[in-house]
Length: 158
Image (tube, rainbow, N blue to C red; front, side):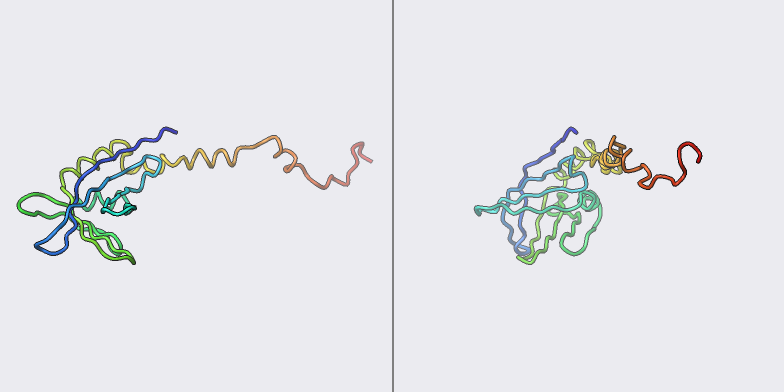
């Protein structure tokens, strides 16, 4: 199966307060072999980047209206007259509010939707092919399907 990767480097803002934010380089990633998920990698100046994975559908919806609950919430808004997407992420290690340029996120999402259109994600997983392979008869099946206890009737009708 052919795998397609759609990535986009962009600079997000980590919102520290209404007056203060710091830039955070990030990479948006999407793989056709993991069609329901988006992957965001934040390069926060440490030895190890921070990775988040959540539903692509959540980000698609969050570009248009508030959505999500729990660990990931996404919503659109305007800051200084420009469209942005806010992502609130929560983990046992802490909470973060990130601001992303709506136009860049939207264009990246459109590319992912062209690679794997909504509703066709399941086809990318090869579940049907895998099931067909598992359920396909093999020569050994004939041995298992044979009656293990032959009939009491004799072959010549006695």
